[in-house]
Length: 287
Ligand code: GUN
Image 1 (tube, rainbow, N blue to C red):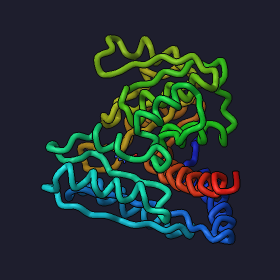
Image 2 (cartoon, helix red, strand yellow):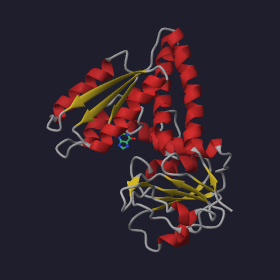
Image 3 (cartoon, rainbow, N blue to C red):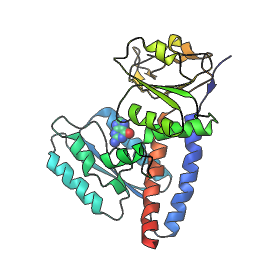
Image 4 (spheres, helix red, strand yellow):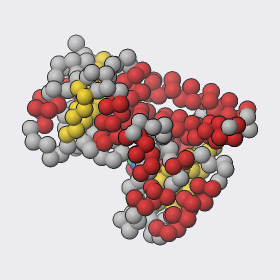
């Protein structure tokens, strides 16, 4: 029997419908949620991501603004742009598309974004609050994975989740969010010896290593839930995930496809975080 497909496109649409209703409610109160995206340089993948973010904002009635800076822009110029956006009342979310050119200190840039507008959830303040389980903006991809599990009726409490990959954007925060929902969490990564001995124990596998078709049936226990966060190109230049879908299909109980699994959820949660930020502005005004 085939594995059940977790359809991120459908779940993403459902959540975007809920977010669009919140946008309408804010607009009735005279507030249009606004997202500013800063793109430095000409990285083709980044350009595509940014265009998709803008289109999605417009589709649900939000304001979006793209600030394009040349690759040779100075760090000080970028920091100035962020400081200006921090002060602007019509902007509720600020996102600096990563990666940045080598001469710019990414940590410095992220730390300059006001935590109140850090809708990516990448700043040290946001990460610290997330670790402590405090109210904050959660990083969009792991947050989106939690929503996929929730909307698919997959119980997390008491399950063993094995994370493959330890990036700041996905792996590390993913483990924290699962831990907060009472999963037992194991982190693995590229230097973990005998990876299958770990992943074979998993009730939930989160594949976030950035290697095409890396997770195969030898990694997966019968009935495990397999979440594929990868976006890669295979040897035929075809879009594929970190999981060899055909190999794992029928062994996993549930699996996310690439494309159409985790991908659509990242932008969905970015929209949700930006709307939350605008709602927080109104809440601060009335208290
Ligand atoms: N580059 C790849 N993924 C992301 C993301 O989620 N946010 C930002 N800002 N840059 C990225």
